[in-house]
Image (tube, rainbow, N blue to C red; front, side, top):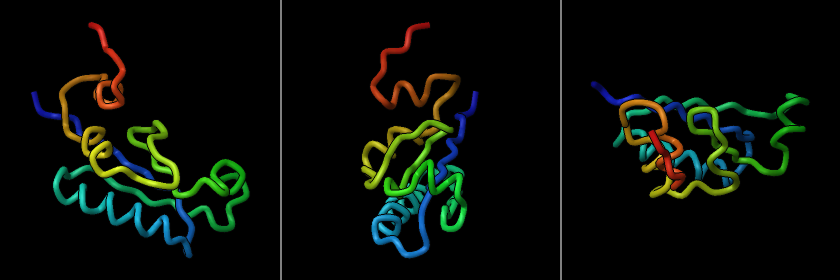
Amino acid sequence: MGGVSAHVRMYSRRACGLCDQARAVIESERRRSGFAFEEVRIDGDDELELAYGLRIPVVLVDGTEAFELHVDAERLRRLVVPRSGPGRLLRALGTLVRS
C-alpha cells in the first residue's frame, strides 16, 4: 500500500519576514518529501484576518494547525513523511495511537 501524501497550507501576508522564513523551510522539505503546498494570503480578507491576524504565519498539516510564527524543519518532516493509513498526523505529533 502506498503512502498518503500530506497537504500543507500556510496562511501568510505579503510583507512578512517570518512568512518568508516559514515558506523557505516548507519549500525545502517539499523538495525532499513531495507533499502538496498551498499558501493563502490573509491580506484584505476580514474573516482570515480575524482568525489568523497577528499569529501569521500559521501552518496547517492535513487540516490541523501545526505551527504558528515559526516552522520547525524537523517536526515538519515528521508530519509530512508519507505513511500508510490514518493517524499519520497524530503519530507525528507524538500522540499514542492504538488500533
